[in-house]
Each structure stands twice: as C-alpha cells, then as structure tokens.
Image (tube, rainbow, N blue to C red; front, top):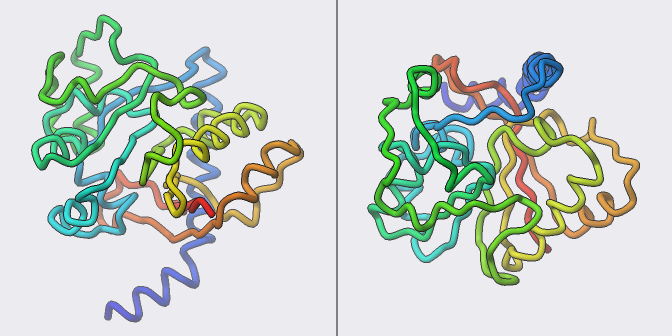
Length: 238
C-alpha cells in the first residue's frame, strides 16, 4: 500500500502541486492588492514536521537536529506559540532561532490571531514572554545575525517566491543564506511548484542559485487539508 502511494505521489504529485500552488498564489496576490504586504501567524510543530520533515515523528525530527543550528526565517508569531517548533526545540536544548522584523514590536494577540493559528492546527495559545525568547530576533532575511558558515538549516514557510517574488530581493536573500550556511547546509522552502517551471532573468539570482544543488519532493497533508499540496524545495550549499 505504501509503495503504491509513493508511486502515485511521484507520478501525480508535481501536477497537483502546480495546480494547488497556482491557486494559493492567486489568493496571495489578491490580498497584496488590498494593501497587505505580509501575513503573520503561528504554526505548530506538527505542521512543520509535515511540510519540512516528510511527516517524520517528533522524536525522529528532534534526534536529527541535535548539535545543529536551525533558523526559521520569516517565523511570524511562531516563537510566541506554546506548541511551536521554536518552543519544542528550546525545551530539548536544540539551537533553534526565529527571525522576523516584527519581533520586538508591541505585539498583542487578539481573537483573530488565535483563530488563524487554530485554523492551521495550533492550540492558539500565546505568551508575549515565552521561554527561549532571546532566540527570537528582529531582523530581515537580507541581514541575518549569524556568522559565516554557522547555520545547518534555514526554514522558510510561505515566504520566498510566495510573498517575496522580486528577483533582486530574492538574489540578496539567497546570497545571505549562502553566507551563513555551512558547506552542505540546506535551505528548505515551502510551498512551491516544480522548479523546472522557474525561470529567472536576474543574473545575480542565477549566479547565487548555481551555488546550490536543488531537490524537490511532494508534500501533502493526507486528510489534513490545512497542509497545502506543494513541492518542498531543498537548496543544499555546495
């Protein structure tokens, strides 16, 4: 049964991902036209396991991260949620950072914020001073507060190629990712469509991308419709 499912995912997954991503992308553009530059929410660790770690168990994911430095870029409200990957990694003494310009602002969580978090599978419980908040840093993706060759994994959920599409900005961000990643370090981007559909005219962006190997796998939530069927894109630093 599992073998049949994997074959079906391999055969039909990319086409499903392309259609799903196109629909989601149109929704993002519609929101942007109404003047919303970015939407922030919190997603639970269970969601991150599904989209970034191929539905592996919590224990397996945490074991794989021991001794590593992991950074969630564009984390939104995730560090403030009690069931987030940020909190779980803190509790397990795993070096996990959240990066977002909104961190450090006077954040107040209202009914809308809690409802949106619950819609994505979170319990919707927030604290303005959660454990490990020192690892939640106000910074932009173009200017990460890390030394060269110091980070093992960079996670980006609904950020690059979704809310940020300008090729010049993407080139600057990926160049910064390349700087902080260790050799063999990986950038995990979700959601996206098939990489073969991506064509760029910006020379700098193409040059930066040539410093990575690129692999994709199909992500879906099964019966969990909160997970957008899309491609997980992994850029590994050469």
